[in-house]
Image 1: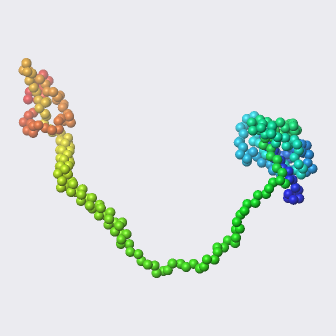
Image 2: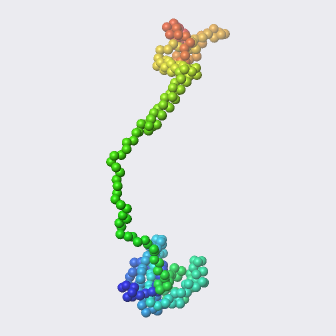
Image 3: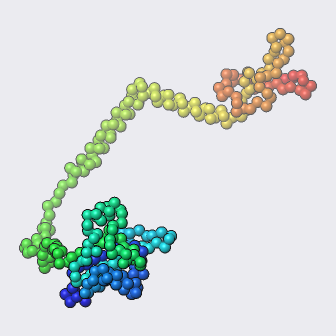
Length: 279
């Protein structure tokens, strides 16, 4: 029914903590609650206007322990002024207790306590007859047609040509000229000046030495160094074995040889099984 045919100017919203919205929508439970409100308020006409779950108002999902409920907000409307019991929550003492998170003292709470646990600090009393309507000043949307500013004149087909040669010089020629100058300066420093020539020669010598070392490491038929030849004891005159064993690895030989003609002239002495030396 429209509000004009069934006016309910006085509306009160209760927050019931021990109910879910599904339970409150049951006709017998809602009838019991409206009966308790009517007993306290005593209006001629009373009706439930809105039932909302506390979860839709920012409430938290309760833990599944101790049969906790999510809570529900129930708004009812009546045609008479609020009773003195409902207005007790507006007293300074109860407002102070609510600010300290304490239960307010409400005389008619015992009429609800048997079945409904109401949070009186969250009760809302609204008198629609005293509410000033707020109208937002919105601009007139109009007809949706743009104002007439004349005909559209597109640009002419004969557009003036533009010369991009200067842009080409600035974009390509100037960086190329700078790079060429820097290349000439670098080449002069490396090839024409004494410091640059020294660096080039030094680099070339390093490359040649590296190639020689690699070639020598690949060659396994290298003459034995003098440190491996037999020597004589200075006192007894006996032949002393060489410093290195017979199975001397070529990989541990000195890479720089001091004698180049030992390969075909000197044979490495070997020891017989009887302990004598022969060459």
